[in-house]
Amino acid sequence: MRASLILLATALWAADRPEDVFQRAVVSLQAGNYAAAEAGFQQVLKLAPGHVGALGNLGVVYSRTNRLADAENVYQRALRVSPNDPALLLNLGLAEFKRELYAAALPRFARVAELDPKNRQALELLATCQLRNGRVDAAIKVLEGLRASNARDGGALYLLGSAYFRQKQPDKAKRALAELMAATPPAQANFLIGKAYYDSGRFEDAIQAFEETLRIEPDFPGGRLELGKTYISTRDNEKAIAELTVALRQDSENAMAHYYLGGLLVQDDRAEEGISHLEEARRRNPDFSGPYFYLGKAMMQQSKPAEAIPLLRRATRLNPEEPSAFYQLARALEACGRSAEARQALARVKELNANRLQALKAQK
Image (cartoon, rainbow, N blue to C red; front, side, top):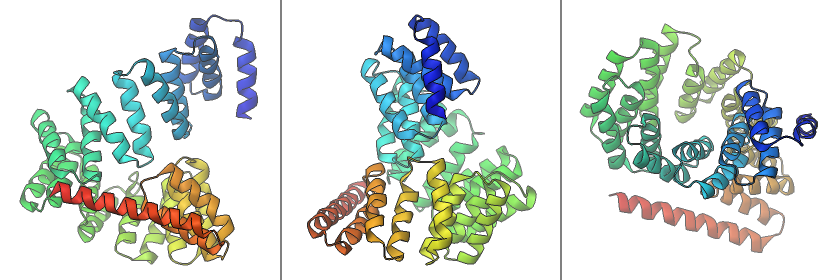
């Protein structure tokens, strides 16, 4: 359906000047008419291939329609024309961030922070990526700067609390979280405190904080999802399934709730139940590697290694830094008698694990 709409819009706009088409495409984007906007920006690019505005806005269309890999490609094209554009760098980093490619996103946000030192969004995202990559000291430096300039920034205080817990400085962490509690409405404050505890591995404390969030506001957005994720970490699968099921009852379109529930069911050797959730997560977020990984595991549980291979290959292409996907791919390849390819996948596992160990040593 989208393809036919794009073809129709392209035919209508084919004879117009690039700037006229561009302006109408912008209006379509603002109105949420993504098919018409996509057709318009593509038509501009046929007439003016280096049009930065069309490239950047086409990236926005792809991001909003969950085609994140396409968004990354078009933002990179735009950056070749305008390499120091903060908006393009930020949007590219956000697309990578949403796919959990934190190492790739980190230098994008760092560059935005250099170009625009007061950009709080870029600084918080930079600190988040630093934490995800184990660069705790660097993250604290960024977050303390944000704290000094605005002590009521709940996002920065949550991240700072998480960072200090990871650095084994609980007194400083609790001070940051106390500031968060004083600066933020109670439900939101408990939610962010729960995330800080979760991120630093303090799962029982996280459960208490998320439960308090839901006591104050039973339908708090993301509350059931985060509580369910935390129960997964404590291996309380029954409670995790219950919370994720409620999350989907509240919002049946929640791709991450489908993903976590499907992945948990597969981990619990309930592949048949998990597959439908994983397929829904893949449909809603086709450039996220997680659903492909667990669908591949589900095929392996069902003794279908040949069906697992393309799913696991897709997972490794979408996230080439995740060793577990390469390990599962090696198992599937070996089960199909493709030993040489299996050895290549295992070599990649060894390389990634060595890289992680080296990075950890460098941070000490």
